[in-house]
Length: 116
Ligand code: 5GP
Image (cartoon, rainbow, N blue to C red):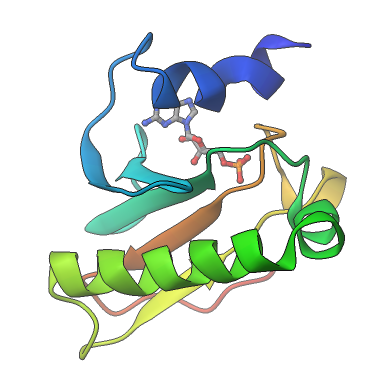
């Protein structure tokens, strides 16, 4: 496995420090090292799937857990009412760099349009 595949497994294991926001039996949420908004938290399933499509077909319940944790993160961060964005970058054109599926939870300010 490449470094980009193992990075989040090492963060979940505590081998690489992270700023944890929330953890339960199946998911781990921590602040992005290069935040793109005032709130920018990554939600990662503890079991590694490469991307959203593989997670959705491989373990739909775990995908539901990731969605539920994204909601919990929004509540913890105080942005559940003001609004927030959940993003799964998938492969090349989307710029995915870590091939362990993760949701970006972004908010805490008015976000710009996305896309090009
Ligand atoms: P992707 O580009 O794959 O959708 O998102 C990967 C995210 O992981 C990026 O937003 C990047 O800033 C974040 N990231 C990369 N390395 C680390 C790290 O070591 N710690 C933390 N907290 N975030 C990281």
